Image (cartoon, rainbow, N blue to C red; front, top):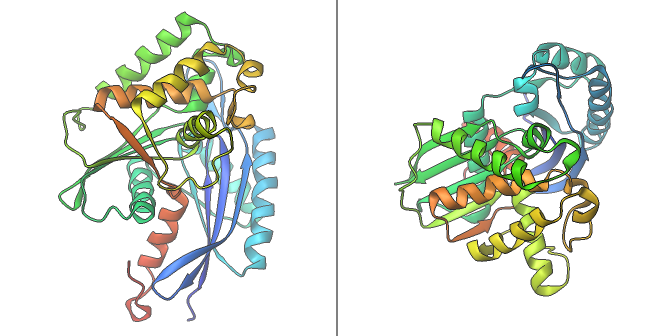
Length: 320
C-alpha cells in the first residue's frame, strides 16, 4: 500500500473552518495551501443546550465540499477534526452523519485534552521549543486550551469552555459592551479557570506562547499601533503585558462592533467577538503572571499534520 505524501488537515472550529494542505518532504513538511471560512457554529436553545441548526449544517457542508474539491486536486489524504462547537452540541452525531453523506468527509470529534496536545505539537514545532519549559495558550471560538510543558514532557494539557464566540453570546448580546457585562464576563472567566484543580498558577516557564485568532489579532493591533502597518510575519512576534493591557483597555472602550472596526489592525470578521477573547487573554496573563508572550503561527492544524506523519509506518522514517 502506497502511503499518502500530501495531507489535508481540516479544523472544524467554533468560529471558523480552517484547512491546510501539506506536502511531506524528507523529514519535514511544507504547507502548500491554506483556506479559512468564518462560520459561527452552534446555536444555544433554552438554558445551556446547544445545537447545530439545519442552516448551519448546510453552510458547513458547503464549506467542506469546497475543501474536499481542493484536497482532491492535491490528491491529499483528509483528516478532519471537530472541536468545541461540535463537541458540545446535542446533535453532534447527526451533524457528522449529514456532513459525511454530503461531502464524503468523516469528521472526528476529539476531547479538549487531545485538542490541547495537538495544539502544543504545532506550537512546539513552530517555536522550536524543544525541552524548554513553556506555557502555551490557545483561545478559540468555543474553548481555550492551556498547556504546560516542563522537563521535556507535558505536565498538563487542559481545555476550558471559554471561547470568544461562546462568551460573546453569553455576556455581550449584539456584541455591545457595558462596564457591568465586562466585569461579569471577567469574573466568570476567573471562576472557570479556578475550577480546574489540575493546573497551578505558580509555575516556572522560560516562555509563554500564544496561538490562534484572538492572540494573533491582539498582536496585529499592537504592531499596527507601533508601526502603522499590518503585521505580515506572525511567527515569533512577541508583545509585553503592558502593550497588551493598553490594547485591551482601548478595545473595551469601543462599545460596539462598528466602533471596533475603526481600530487599526483589527480583523473585520473578529471585531464582534474580540473583546471576549481579550478578556480571556488578560485573565491568563494575570493568573500566570505572564510578562511577555511569543506568537506561534502553528496550532491545531499543524499538530494534526505532525500526528499523521508520526503514525506513518517506520520504514518511511519521518522524524522531527
